[in-house]
Image (cartoon, rainbow, N blue to C red; front, side, top):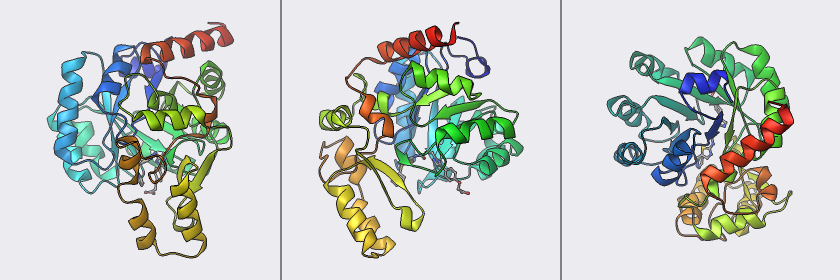
Amino acid sequence: MKTKITELLGIEYPVIQGGMAWVAEWHLVSAVSEAGGMGIIGAGGAPADFVREQIRKVKEATDKPFGVNLMLMNPEADEIARVLVEEGVRVVTTGAGNPAKYMAMWKEADIKVIPVVASVAMAKLMERGGADAVVAEGTESGGHIGSATTMTLVPQVVDAVNIPVIAAGGIADGRGFAAAMMLGAEAVQVGTRFCVAAEAITHDNYKEKIIKAKDIDSEVTGLSHGHPIRQIRNKMSREYLKLEKEGASMEQLEQLTLGSLRKAVVEGDVVNGTVMAGQIAGMIDRVQPCGEIIREIMEQAEALLGR
Ligand code: TUI
């Protein structure tokens, strides 16, 4: 399927893998890219050296296009932004902030810049700043989220900008893909379904938590201090919400969640760790290789869209 995004990125299918912290390292990224989608390394809170190493490993594993997501709250964001140029990365997505200060450097290096946005205002700002496309991410997504739903955000962003829009949040199959196309998107970004991919190094306990999740097992913490995080309900989310209700300070809350995503993804502690996942987790019922995931999405979507 050809769209403005497959043309822009030189990929076969308009399916982008979300740049999930800890999860989206070279194994998953190279598998998605090899399968004809766009793998994205999730820099998350990792140090610059780690990101450099991941880029090199993906290049060893595949010749296909891939990208890197820079999480802008990363304390080494400035350094990582330079590493992306030094390592010749072709596509960068950004999250959890405004990448304006890196835009000139990246454009100079001919990098395709695709900020993830959660509002029309941010999408317009990014277009004016030279972004090549935007990911419009609805509140159905896992992790750090905005407040607008995918259904309402995507068409409003599509109307507001002239650059291509990639829809994200709650999309995991061909129906979601087709719906996104109807809203005017040129591609989709999929996170949660790739989090349970066979090639993803996500701990089996984490994958199982997603596979067992039902439609309403999702919870949002951190709303009170402006950093909402969507995750699957567990002991950690309950404790966090209780403390939040009691008016705990931001420092106290940060102390509770320090290293909690790693604890769940890497160590498999899905009781005391944070199990970030989107609301679509309830629909995800098995571990599959990336190639199979992409094929299923595209076959179902093409049948629905009559292409
Ligand atoms: O970035 C994400 N999702 C993430 S990042 C992440 S790592 C993390 N771990 C612990 C605590 C906090 C983060 C987990 N999930 N998605 C992209 C995204 N960006 N969603 C919403 C936004 C966003 C929000 C505000 C983008 C720009 C923005 O602008 C604010 C500003 O600076 O004006």
